[in-house]
Image (cartoon, one colour):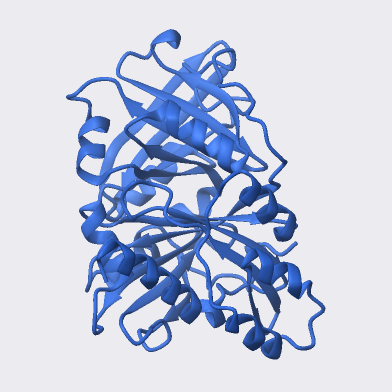
Length: 381
């Protein structure tokens, strides 16, 4: 299995003085939604996640409820507000359901926070401590694009997989019925920002967080006859990989602009989840009712020419609509769901890497044409 740790090392930065040097990997991704129980149930039923913990009035929390879902090393937290004046409720009214917090495990939450804010990060919440009879959890939060945030989570004195004090495993949701899906970890998380803001946010991750620029795609590399976008990928030098997109000029509305308008600002567009067996995973997801974007049949004739020397189950890939691409290090298999919220915003990517460390550049045109077909059906192209 290929992970991003197999990439060339990130260029050295001011190593002892950047938050990136304190990062240990992904802790969780939190979504703010209008109905937490229903959204958690959907992700369990459709994507095979298990409920491992719950927080709400029954556990002493009065203003919100959260369901913690897990599969492999992926942890999602689905949170909803309990009153009309809740900041969560107001956020959902403006943006719709979506990703709010990209939380990272760190060696020292207060230190990571101090390094980030000293370099210009916006404070969301100063370092705080949560305790129960299991131990002490240390956290701090800074802002990134739009109303998205990063929480630094220090679990060194808090054992186990429960998110935090105030969560109960006894109140978790029951196991859904369906075939095993086999998702293993977060591969990357993609954000969309307004036109003209890409360079600003790349600089934020480089200069404030201490990330490095991994690759950049110009509008002529990611375009169709109708629309285009630009994208830069930043990473911490290990496992946290974050492409950032902005719309580019085209004949019609870019998919990124559609997102910005639907979400009322910048935010997370999609989360890429890895698997060791994409054929089995996608078959299970389809059996569970997940809907995917489609590509024309002609795509596979071209793909087989591009990867003629690679032994692949082409009939299965075409039947399941799985895309294939290669780079100098190997190949990858990927597929994209339709948007999973009411607004045309958040979707998931399923990806399996065989040496390749790219992002399916050879599939960009087919993918964006598929997205444009959905845009046209919504009347937004």
